[in-house]
Length: 256
Image (cartoon, rainbow, N blue to C red):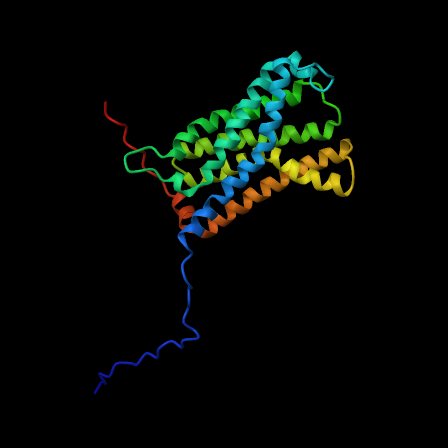
């Protein structure tokens, strides 16, 4: 005769019971979410202020050997500085989670800003490449720095194009990854100061080779930080990467 007695399940020992701890306070979470964009805005101030000084010089400053190339061909630099300013400052807010989510039936702020960031980012990168190729090399710049500018400027253009193509096919994970890489390359103009100032204070003035290596290191650091955040997002939500590989049905065209 089978026994109808149910097995007794021993309760978990209090010491082995997981204790998630108290949830983070809403005020602290709000502060943490804005830490990244505030840091990016702080880094953006370096190229933004430098660009403002350059525009002031072009508006009525004296011509010097350092800025003569801008007076000879002002259109590329007049395109580059405003587009870099918009791209860096507006792009910093794309990392705020609350701005990514739009209200039902309304286009999110993230998407509206993205329609501005893609063209401004491309104009900033392409005008930068044009200046690197066709302007005379300024003092303390050499062939190595020129090559680095061409490599990272081209990588920014490719990242923006791939990010745009990804969002067109509704692959939002790949879109986020490529746009993060593009912004990391752009924000490196601010990282240069963070890298260069300690070197100047601790070691001394830079020469042509040292300047190229420090600027190259700034690009590498910015890209590495961007890849870290991409990897962390992938670990936090692996199901999103699985879903991004699935086919997505196209959205129906709106009726007129």
